[in-house]
Image 1 (tube, helix red, strand yellow):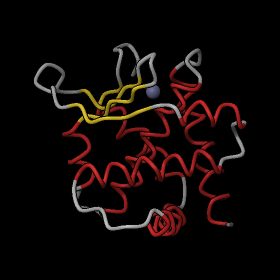
Image 2 (image 1 turned 135 degrees about the horizontal axis):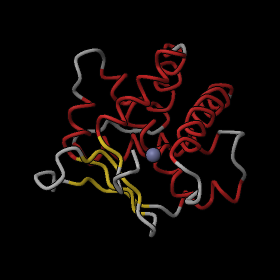
Image 3 (image 1 turned 90 degrees about the vertical axis):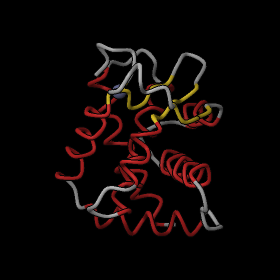
Image 4 (image 1 turned 90 degrees about the horizontal axis):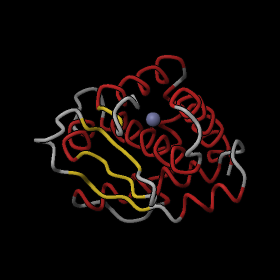
Length: 165
Ligand SMILES: [Zn+2]
């Protein structure tokens, strides 16, 4: 959690686990298939996979009824990159700084994508994490608990709205 200035891998796995045990993830997988089809082209390498995942997360955020247009616009200016200096911070999962730059740990990214359960689960978790970071960036004054709750709301309403169209 935020007693460190970043999100640990453990925390990120935990909030997704928490969400996915409470909700019907099959619906999210249907939405995901549609999202990936819309973001045309086949992702061939890491950079392209990350770009697809990030763009899909933005579409979900944009579809959500829980945040307004101005807040959505703010998120469109954020940037992202993979963070590979994990020798110093082995538990580093993700972070957004004051400039709106999102860092996603390279190991966390790969391990989550390549988990055994289902590749779709990995993509969904990474999108969930990105939305969580986007919300930290949009609402810098909200605490961890509030952002975690907002992540759930935005995800749920964003996915629901998105599949309607
Ligand atoms: Zn957080």
